Length: 505
Image 1 (spheres, rainbow, N blue to C red):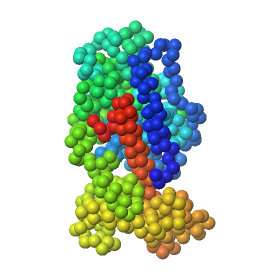
Image 2 (image 1 turned 30 degrees about the vertical axis):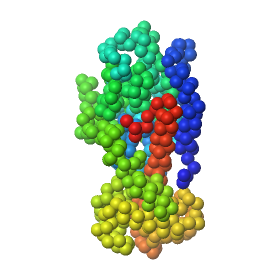
Image 3 (image 1 turned 45 degrees about the vertical axis):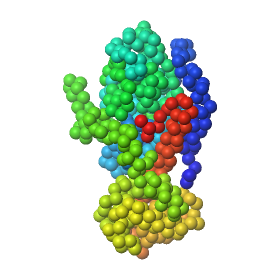
Image 4 (image 1 turned 180 degrees about the vertical axis):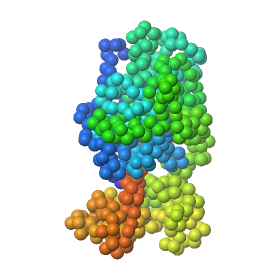
């Protein structure tokens, strides 16, 4: 691994813990907790949120999105980052000239702690507004309404139409979910609800897999999640509604009023209620809803066996194996190369930039000995990009790996000359020219006349290069997390608990 990453280590640690605890979890899965044993508190250890509002986020140029890896929020499709939550928030960052980074909630991690500690800035994970959650976070105005419904396994052999018909059926939900709160309310009202509390690190999609496989009798999901899941999972039966028109919103720190204001202003353009209380959505939001929850095939394609056997050809991208082979040849990190390819061309071998760079790795023909036509061949282009990256890495070989890659990426994007100008300016500023943190500041300065007029290579769009490096570094970390996540799912599955990888329908 290129960087130390506690988040990824947590995922890998979960594999070991789950392997030990499989028998215990399986053994207690049918037990129902009594009211006296129920703890309604959320998984929170960070009680005081950091001071970080919109001004600080704007200054850093990055908004960090805390989310789950699922078809409802965020996932990879042919190597490209997609998802309803991701695309909606991406639109906000685009309008506010911000980069969007993804922080995936790992096993045993609290999204509220990630938020309040400053590791992320917003929880965008299809969260319902509940009184319990409002004690630790603030919510934006809603951007969606959902109904909660019981989903039962086809193996049960019946189609329940009312809550009363669910007597004796164990409904498996996480304690920290809004579904648990609603089921407990119904139970207190006298309905025959049998709640089976399952581990908090199981997202709704994973639980639906278990229900589809007959490992759980039933669970609760919102109607959007059920509609999406039923297109690629067999064995799910739609049961009775238990809540209608729950409001879905983004969670933010309680001391970030300016961020809340900017988010609310954005969401008002896309979702609001008319004078009769009827929700009105923008064309953009309706397109997203249709794409992910209604008639689109993207999610169904992603999870189908045919797609996994043919179209995807890899966990991250369609070119995983090819990139692996080339990376091994040049002794490069294949995950980093994949992150670069995603940034450069979105894995499109026919891509041509405004500057004339072509192919998956966006190689400039004038700087290559390979013919222009040959650069459109994926393997040729990837190998040429790897060759260029290797040269840049060797140039900065005396640095630690993080700085080495940062400078190599900056050089790949802006050219050796502009990076050299930024390093000279860093020296003039009495800072370390071997630290990317300092040189990135100088790249931004080279957009100002008083600095670039004395630079050897003149003006450069430093903000683009800085963002380029930051986004690739973040994507690299995200890819690593996803790989560890998939390994975890596969390990748990072979261990007997039956959790399925998102890449295994």
